[in-house]
Length: 396
Image 1 (spheres, rainbow, N blue to C red):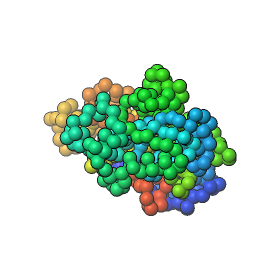
Image 2: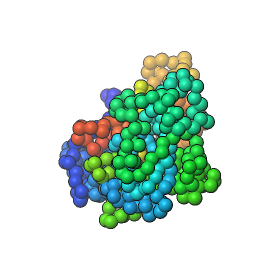
Image 3: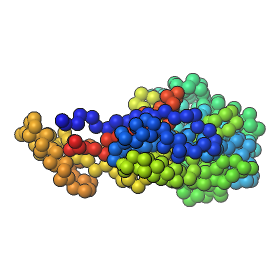
Image 4: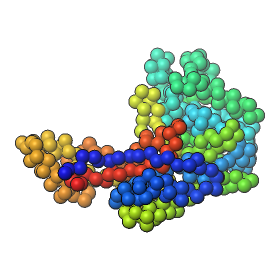
């Protein structure tokens, strides 16, 4: 009988994970309990665990005073620009508190009409009505208020201009806010800059240095080593952090490769199947209504086993049906398409029959599927078990 089910993504429940827990054992035990002792696992199944619980097990936390101490060491004058932060109470607000506690004065440069992940200060329609050119115009806070007044985020109900200024001033630093989309605009005010954009971070640092910045750092340069026994992340610093309490944040996990290798090894030994494993964070997708791009982590997956390297190599079925086999139908059409799949080239880049397939890395695609499956709320499924992802129409 022909198999009718393709890819299946399951959220797997786990215990509430605390600092010091053995994350490899917890994931292994949870998957074995969900898969009939491993009997239901199949070759090339993927087991993924969210970065949040990996970091929690590692105890990878820092406090605002730790951030402040590191900022003071790296910006000894205490006066510097903070450029392109995302607008987020969860992702950036506590980071900003720590940064401000280590500062005397901050020039806060906000991109507009939105931050890089799609949180809007104002709409494009607002810009059009005001006659503002976001590619060239630099707006003071006073000019911004004159043109746009007080705008609250449609989902959070927060005026982030007011909120961020209050955070800085409440931490004891002076704050001057302006709006510009060229990272180099901050150099009019200060030659010392902390660029906080995520995916354009290396370009921003390069542009600042080329334009004469004396200190040009980004968030991956803050909390790269322990401060007073705190957590740290040597690769990403404050990128990928999330609010834990009012005074602490959880950093992106570190040393994740042994975690995924350990999970894969345990499950292979228990099931006899070739299992792949990964740690995942934010998925890489965009909300078409709110315009928010989900990916606020520096990468979708900080670690994964070798079988998840690369991109899909797939034929587009509708292209074959409408072109190569337009004269066929029914079983004859299906058999012809299956034969094409069985004999497809090992690398379909540039082949018209693959157009329309998603040209993204496997870890970005699978990580997005994991993030959508687990959600970010109270599902209680920080582990994802995916079967059939690497199957195609010929799989029986």
